[in-house]
Length: 56
Image (cartoon, rainbow, N blue to C red; front, side, top):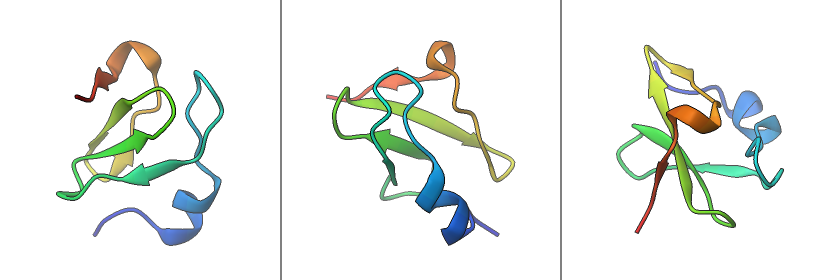
């Protein structure tokens, strides 16, 4: 099913408030500023800092 485009437009990183972008394989949402990747579980973005991983 995937993330709704309207939802993606309003989501922002909870750490630095930068808009997030969908990762290539649709497994997460990436913040370009602080390089965190927030996972997507069962088509629901988990926007918790503790659940995020750091991108290279």
